[in-house]
Length: 119
Image (tube, rainbow, N blue to C red; front, side, top):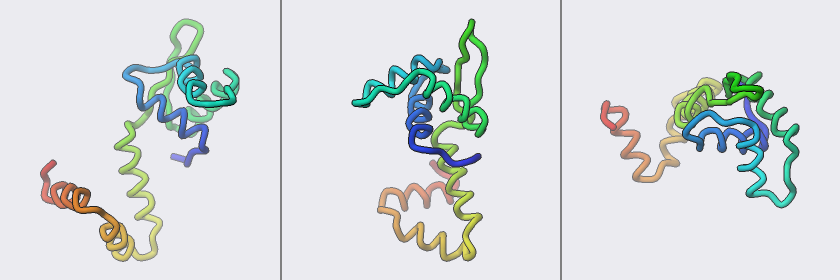
C-alpha cells in the first residue's frame, strides 16, 4: 500500500469512523464541517478514487454513486505500517530496541501481553 497525503489521511479517518460504507457526499460533509475553506465535491471524489487506486479503499455501486469502505481497519493498517517500517531497517534488533524504549508503561504491558499470547 502506498502512503497517503494529508487530505487522503483525512478522508480515511472519515471512512474508518463510519459504521457503514460511505458515499462521496458523506465524506465532503464530514471534511467541510471542520474546515474554514470548504472542499469541492470533485476534489473529494478525486481523493476517493486515488484511495481506490492505492488499494486503501474498495467501492461498489449504489444507484448512480459509489459507496466506499476501507480495505483494512485502522488498527490492521497501523500494524502493517509498523511491520513495513521494521522491514526497511538495516538493523532490526536496534529498531525494535528503539521502539520498545519509547513505549510508556501501559503500551509496554500491552506489548508484553501480546507476546505472551494474551490480549
